[in-house]
Image (cartoon, rainbow, N blue to C red; front, side, top):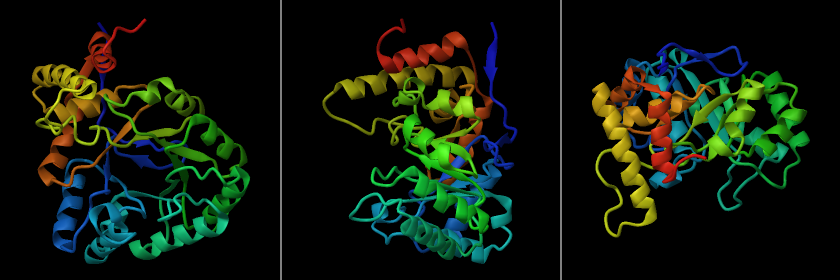
Amino acid sequence: MTELFLSPEPRALGNSGLSVSPLAWGMWRFAGDDVALAQAKCEAALAAGIKFFDTADIYGPDNDEPFGASEALLGRVFKASPGLRDRIVLASKGGIRMGVPYDSSPAYLRAAVEASLTRLGIERLDLWQIHRPDMLAHPAETAATLDALVAEGKIASIGVSNHTPQQTSALARHLKSGLVSVQPEFSVLHTAPLFDGTLDWAMKHGLAVLAWSPLAQGRLGDGDPRPGRRSAETLQTARVKTALQAHADRHGVGIAAVAYAWLMAHPAGVIPIIGTQNPARIAEAGDACKVSFDRAEWYAILTASLGENLP
């Protein structure tokens, strides 16, 4: 039976001309004032073969820090380690404004990109993504602003996060620079991109797929993060973790590595964005490339998530 093997080799970031690692490191919880510790986390990612970092200007308030704090901390790491910036492909996001909540107006998008560059202490972002769609922004105006920022050299390529295929298509129609990536929530417990057209649209148009929350807010990590009454959600989690653990035991890896590998096995070339800030867990993420599936094994994990057989 044909097996689906995962390659540790770099893969294309859409048609951007950039090559990225098969896993990305997310910086939602990248926080604090200890620059040496922050740098050690970055180095742990690089040591694990992860050279694609994903941050956002909104990362900060969830950690009881100011807006932009995660970018600012990474900027201090770049200053302390000048060669680090050139060793990674760096993505950021914008378009969420505190108290609004979404703003893709031309003036705000430009201000958001320029503020991110200032916090990071760099001149250009490799990938900049609209974090969430602004329903009051016409895609033609949004596209014109983003095209201008590409022409000015402030961003190298453009992506979207949390957009439906229709919203993505509407923006792509007006962009001269083109889109290179989409970033949906995608995990074994959140399988909507398999069914809502997101992955199909990405494959049709050659876009990279970056999966946020691949461990389902930690529910697919070690232990049971939701003790108490066994709701339908926790029963689903229990089924999935049992299936993942059995596969992990066969390959001699941890359950998280299998959860990442299950996403990576999809032909869209999904790039999971791992969120852990623990250097040891970051290192373990690379074990995903030691995992393989045959079709029956991959679909068994999907049916464990759905709680019913596929038609």
